Length: 505
Image (tube, rainbow, N blue to C red; front, side, top):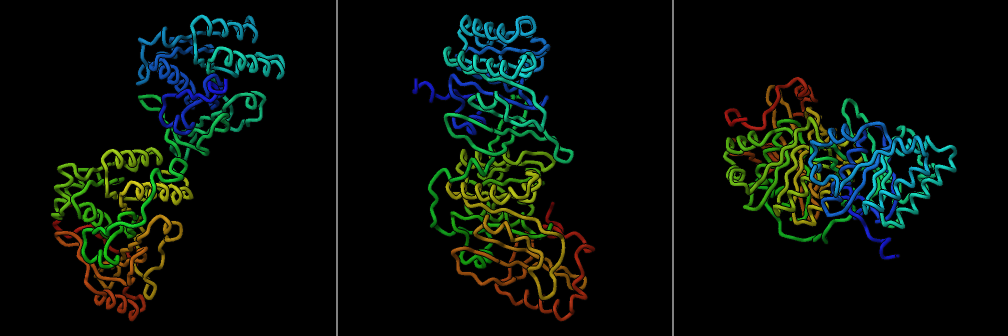
């Protein structure tokens, strides 16, 4: 008896099984609750067809007035649907009339008969709220749930009860305390954008990933993305602290970093639009002939390749032959956790050793919760370290110039510093009609560095950095002597380009 109770029944939905640490208990009884349109019916049907695909028998029982024909028409185009599985693998029963005429006892008897006759091991009961409304008293409804528990245990049949609920309804009802698990599906608006969340409130007999997780309804059905900071609470492999230093692809930047990047490290490149952050990423990915990955939120793959070719950078042929892959996720739409999971899958499957994330700001926008970005990116960076991949990410600063005498004013270091071992800042300085570019390494953990600004420019072959701080010091001193009068805000200056004139887009 104890061995059977601890056996898990997989849902067949990868992300959901990950959250449930393998699935639900076989022979258990569960409630999936959510507002209308949250995805309960699709999830219930997907569970049935996934179970049938593994050779099991599932029964989908409706207590609602909607016909099975209409329901099947709605789910028929989804990837999990398999008409050949009906009726042997998946069968349907409308118990609406039974509930109306015979009440809860008649419904319980009908379910018992069907489970026995069809040898059912997974039952989905859609419309639990109708059963609750039929009960004369809360005690009667509680007795109905208890009878289902007994039947699930005796028949070794896992039961999942689907019910609608108001968005503000609590979870203190008798049925919530009696069942083995309680999962909530939510559909909500964030500004003008619709998002779906999944939350496990209760799960007996094992652990589960707590917190709010994202899910989507796609043409394949329900797709669940576990919360990345919960999924990667600890790295999947032991993390090495040492390792050889690697080149950024820009010799003078290596010098400013104390010899280069450690293999097990993450680097944050901060700067305004057009300062050359993406160009550093191109240099980094082409510095060594090893698998790389470019995650872009703005530029599409053809634009990325064209820029590398225009600057005649070593990474250009690596894009063409697939040694360096490009993952493009337009910032117009996207689910943060889903993108993180796709990124990780690509790193693992291709054995990627260099990861460039162009636009951490877009990550912040996708979460809708800025407090998540620090823990989530820390978890992601830790996993990259465990996989032996070095990461460089960009963060876009406001488009303004250096304040005379305070060249680091306005940097949002707080909250971002724990993510990266190395922090590089690229800034503009305006003197009269000229706009100068300056770069500094603020942090390089485990390396001996001298934090000093150096002048740099973007030439026909990429970024060139001065060997010393002489020219940068002259520019900064000139700003101080002029008292900021000529250091006009770049808010009114022309938009600087990531490349020189004639170098392409």
